[in-house]
Image 1 (cartoon, rainbow, N blue to C red):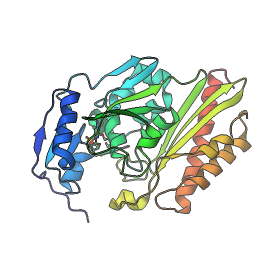
Image 2: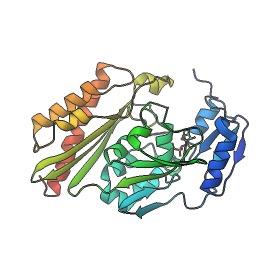
Image 3: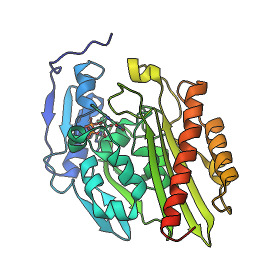
Length: 306
Ligand SMILES: Cc1cc2nc3c(=O)[nH]c(=O)nc-3n(C[C@H](O)[C@H](O)[C@H](O)COP(=O)(O)OP(=O)(O)OC[C@H]3O[C@@H](n4cnc5c(N)ncnc54)[C@H](O)[C@@H]3O)c2cc1C
């Protein structure tokens, strides 16, 4: 049974007023520092003594980090943008339906009020609901340290469970989402096990770009967890989220074809690397990939594209 204390371990709170100051503090306080955004991952981990940082750096004192902005044809999310802001944003709903649906199916209202998209990506869990939608949307993140800035695709940030490719001296300052190609539709479907507080057992993000009733482009990415992790919090190293490129290939150039959709779902289930490789997990990946693709085609039909 996991040890779960009500009391937090002792730490010193760092409260920078600018992003540059935050980067300098990270550089000077080094590995002993944890950044806190909404705290919905970090605080339980500290209570369980899984993480015992000496310093906790809060970004809340830095103005303007909670904005959703339009810049250079992209939508840019600040590092304090919450899941409820994403869920309620008309820009996200209209242009990035796959992300809006992921936010809609995320935990509960209380958690969504605090939890940020940046925290979800930086925690990099095997069932992070925003990672696969942001991969299919081709989103990138900006990472800042006292030494400079770099831009990394979300697909490269979240490659291994609980180990984002983020250096200890870096903080995520922006998530940029390009405008999807015209005639693109998307869906996020999530399957949750009873008693799993809303975490995905399987979450599938799919987008289709449809022209002349044919699929010109398809993107599929997914997360999958395991009963074992959801129950006991066991950690395994495995590559997730998974970008199902081979499954995408089965759809390109085809219309709403049941055979192509089933083939894509089969290939996604065969090629994914679920943390615990059970027949049940693979079956659920297959079922939910197929359903997500069928729903995406239905949306294309509603828009007169198919
Ligand atoms: C009851 C409950 C239900 C949940 N349900 C779901 C669910 O349905 N789906 C899901 O995906 N998750 C779920 N979660 C997990 C959690 O809510 C999400 O991962 C959330 O998005 C984390 O965001 P946060 O702002 O709370 O992150 P925090 O806890 O503040 O931080 C998470 C991690 O990211 C790091 N971090 C945060 N911001 C930055 C930054 N700007 N730069 C660098 N590092 C940063 C922190 O240091 C920490 O390591 C749930 C959690 C709880 C407690």
